[in-house]
Amino acid sequence: MNDLLKTKLKLIPHKPGCYLWKDEFDQIIYIGKAKDLYNRTHSYFNGPKDNKTSKLVSNIKDLEYIVVNNVNEALILENNLIKTHRPKYNILLKDGSNYPYIMITNEQYPRLKYVRTYDKNKGIYFGPLADSTNKYQLFNLLNSIFPFNKCNHQPHQKCIYYDLHQCINQVQPQTYEKAIAEVKEIFKGNLDHILAILENKEQHAVAKLDFENAQKYAEQQKALTYIINSGLVQLDNNESFDVVGFYEKNNYLVIIIFNYVKGKLLNKSADTFAIYDHEINELITSFLMQYYSQNKISTKIIVSLDDDNLLALSQRFKTKFINAQTKFHKQILKLAFDNAILYFDSNIKSVINKQNELDEALNQLKQILKLSDLSMIECFDNSNINLSLPIAGMIVYQNGKLNNKLNRKYNLMTTKNASDYHFMIEVITRRYQRLVSQHQKLPNLIVVDGGKLQVNAALYALEQLQISIPLIGLKKDQKHKTNAIVLANGDEIILDRKSVLYKFLANMQNDVHNYAISFLRNKHTKSIFNSLLNDVQGLGKKRLNELLNYYDSINDLKSASDQELLQFLPKNVLVNLREKLNKI
Image 1 (cartoon, one colour):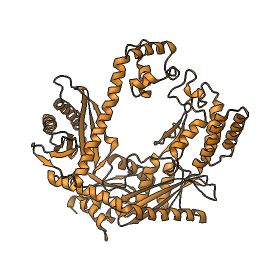
Image 2: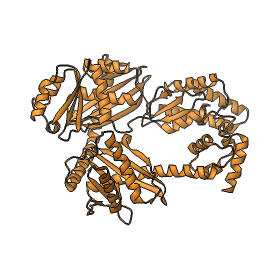
Image 3: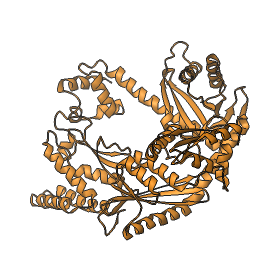
Image 4: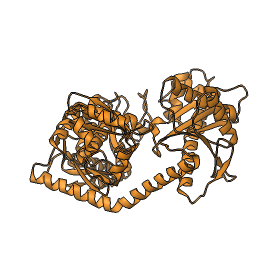
């Protein structure tokens, strides 16, 4: 422990707050909260430690701390700080760890949607949905049974779904209210009413000799019963709650969450984490803060935590976080803990292997480049169509893992002397001019997709900005496969295709290429729409954007029926559009 750290530790007060451990590069490597900052921070340096905790402590060279009024404030602050800094040694939810829901929008004409983001202000959510449930089949089935709006806007007249009896145009609000109420009952497991309605429709169709629709209603009954009941575990209890179980062994922690709705197990989610701090209560609390900030929360959460953290979580989310109190709750909690053990035993080898491969790849890259820190890597790729519509994509790796929230897209402005060389100069200049002007931290390494040309362009941009950042290129072979690292001095290092470093860099190159090319395709489609259709009388920018959001190509637009297009356009504009499309 250095003298600076010793001095700071002595000055820490016996108050609640958050502490931020830093390494020799002033990077935040771990964030925690404490009821007593002094006692908690000093505990890291007292008593025996296992290998992973020792690894964390050996990297601690400095700290910051923030004092707050109570544990509840510390909990909220800790979660915000972790989301902002994503420290290396904290438990972090994977990007995109939101679970699927079926949602009814709160629009005037409600739509049924399948989503992976939860925002209670946008509608009514059902889920999260179990992986074992036929999620897409259920979504499509509900859409076929109930008359929710299938269009992306308020309809002007009957659409194609109306003729298929899957949509109602200017319906009374009560019609949607009844449909919403029926869907709610279905997700409670109460199928009697909707099955009776479908059976009645079936019999009515048979009486009219409408055997096609009779068969459809019969199949809907069968499918609905099967899908709702498959993957659901029924309890002899009608409660709705979540149960959190966990298991820690050999510096790895499994956390498992069961979601029960009206006595049925709707979903089981599990995550495995390497841990460097054995205050399990704090780790579980940190995880739950992240999880329930992104996902729907039940009215009751059963979890084995200390009273302080239970109270802090309850106050933060305005719901009950409780220890198992009844015999029934204890049985369910034991089931969650047993499942956590089983999940650990079946998945731990894969988790450890992946982490070891990542650590080894980063170590190999550090050795090649003679760098001691690669906690932040930014990777760039440019794309264009014959030097027109130039764009660039940047992806960010934090501690070796892609963080999609930090990715950026660039519409490039270079027109004079347009070339790959000048496009790379522009994007590097724009990116780091902004970071410098805003006094933000620079990455440990820049990676460009390309060879000497792209590397030299990036180096030139950095020189003009008078900043120095380690930089390499990734060169492909004639088969368009990742082949070599191109150093700043122009030397090339051929990669061993069997190495973990090759796998890491090839994935990075593919990720940035796919990110950039996807952006280019979207821009190209917009450009084609604009260039071909901008002179259609009555087709303004707003209507053109509506068509662009709904149709992926001109061919899709040409094949659309008049009934479908009349949802977007008045008849006179549709006539003008058809005349134009027939000439293309």
